[in-house]
Image (cartoon, rainbow, N blue to C red):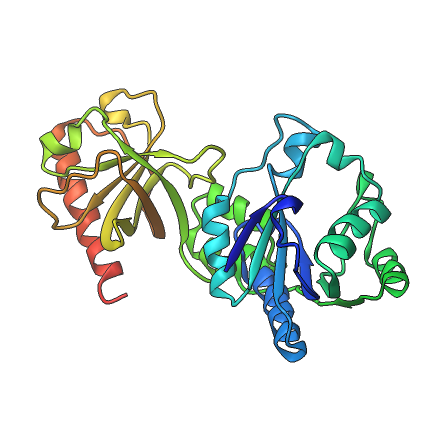
Length: 314
C-alpha cells in the first residue's frame, strides 16, 4: 500500500481512483463497511482504492486543546486500512488555512486534480469544507459537474455495545474510558490497542517478581479506565499474553498514571527503548490500595491466573 503525506507526494501519473474521506480513527466496524465498499468498487472498475484522512485531528486545529483521545495513531490506522485491501492512503496536513477552504475548492484540489476520482464513497453524515458546509448532496452535485460518481453507504452498525447505540469512534472512546473493553472490542472488531516506547519506571514489579513493561504511550492515546486487564503485549513482532495495569499504583502512593504490562511466564525480557503494543482483551478489576505487600502479591497472582486463562488459545 502506498502512503502519501500531502498532495505533493501523489505520483504525477496517478490515474482514476475510488476515494473515501474521513478521520477513520479506530477503523471500527462502521469504517470497515465504507472502506470495504470503496475497495469493492475499485476492484469492479479496475482502479486503485484511496483513503483520505487528516493529521492532526481537525478538532485540534479548529478548537485547540480539544483533540479527542486517539483510538489508533496514524501508523496503526494505516496498517488497519491496508488490511482491508486499500491501495493508497493520503494523509492531508490539517492546517488553519486548509480548514478555511470552501467545499468546492476541496473537491477541485483533492478529488479532481490530485486523485482523479471516478467514484467517491461516503457515509450519509459526511461533511467537508469550511465550517463543514459541504454534505453528500453538494458532493453529488459537484460530482455531476466534475465527472465522478458519489455513492452513499449506510454505515450504521449496532450491537450490544452502548445499549445498541450505533457504532462510532465517539462511542468507542466512551467505552474505553469506562473500562468496558468487551463493548469497545465489539465496536472495533478486535481488542483496543495502546502503543508506546518502554521506559524505566520505579521497577517495583521486578522487585515483586512481576517485571512490567512501563509504556510511555503515544500522545493523545485513548487509555482505558484505571484497573487491571487481561490482554497481550507485542514486542519485536512477538505477541505475549499479559496482565496489564493502568493507574497510579495507589499501594505505593503513586501520583503518575501509567500503563504497565507483565508478559506472563516470560523471564529475562529486555524491552527498554522498544516500541510495543498493548492489546486490552478484558477488564479484570478496579485499581485498589492494599494494606500490605503480601495482600498485593496474592491479588497479583490471581490477576495473572485469570489473564492467562482468558488469553489461552486466542
